[in-house]
Amino acid sequence: MNKEYAALTEREAAAMLAAAMPAAAVSAAAMSAPPLRADIVTHASPDADTLGCALALYSIINENGGDAAVVGTDPVPEYLRFLTEGVVISDSLREGAVRIAVDVASPPQLGKFQKDAGTFSLMIDHHGRGEAFADHVIEADAAACGEIIFRVAEILKTEFGMKIPLSAYSYIYAAISGDTGSFRFANTAAATHRIAAELHEKGVDTVTIAHNLHAVKTRGEIAAERIGFSNMKLLCEGRLAVTSASLSELNEAGVASGDFSLADEMRSVMGVYVGVSLKENEPGVWRVSTRANVGIDCAAVAAKFGGGGHKGAAGCTLCGYDREGAIGAIVDEFAAAIKDFELDEK
Ligand SMILES: [Mn+2]
Image (cartoon, rainbow, N blue to C red; front, top):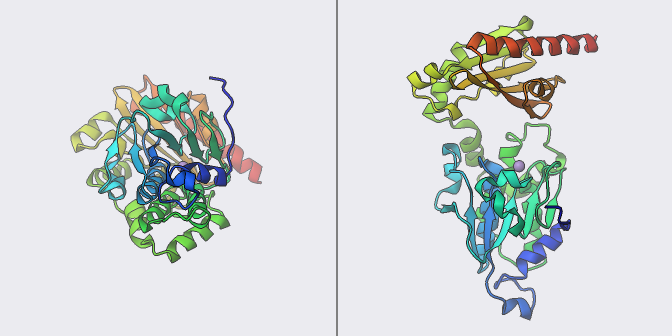
């Protein structure tokens, strides 16, 4: 798959959408064009950004006489169902529909649609690294794919006369709020705040979206936290916080593995540099997630165990360990990284 795909501007992407939209005041030719049938496809293990972007395009296209569907390979997680309420998320692609991927960096992230990657017409994404599989708008500076969708929506409105419903702006706000951790992560730029301010002025209920995304916890997550905090250990003179859950602990408490993810909570302990959360997914198989507050490279540690990720957030899987062995292996690596970091600081 070495086909060359074109990098498009936001305006070119907007024009492509508008050209097939009956309600758009583009041209007489467009007025007689059949309505745009578009499948907007999210990435596997969907998050607020991919779903928010897909739902925003969906509501814009349908508002303007098109026929859009949101398509995803995995079920919508419980905490995001407030977002998809009232919209059917399909798990199959329609014959003859234009295929648009949002927040998808490369074909494997399409999940079961990976084999269809070559049939996509447009990718809109903000991951710097990836593999383009269609003509694309890729802006690595954007904190969320939702920022790009916002600009495309504004072009559709101002240049092509399309109607943008409030729901689209709300979905875009959710996308941006999700990927910036409610405007707390380092990716949050001045431009991100400016877009958020515009969305606020347009009437988006920012308070409810932020609450649903960042404050609400499921009962499963609360049960997971109970296990996580009671198993927490502070090591390396309080610089490393580690917690873990064994398969039997998860099963006894009826906690789904997906609900146990406490690296961020570990990282929140005052004075801690690195938070680590381990869970046993199968006997002897430990999934490890790590988060750092300071310049400690989680990805480098994860890579030693065949994992990867970003400097501040990474993960790996350890096979054939008991709990103490798995914790010990990870702690040894981070203890060394913390020591190096502290020496560099001096
Ligand atoms: Mn994203």
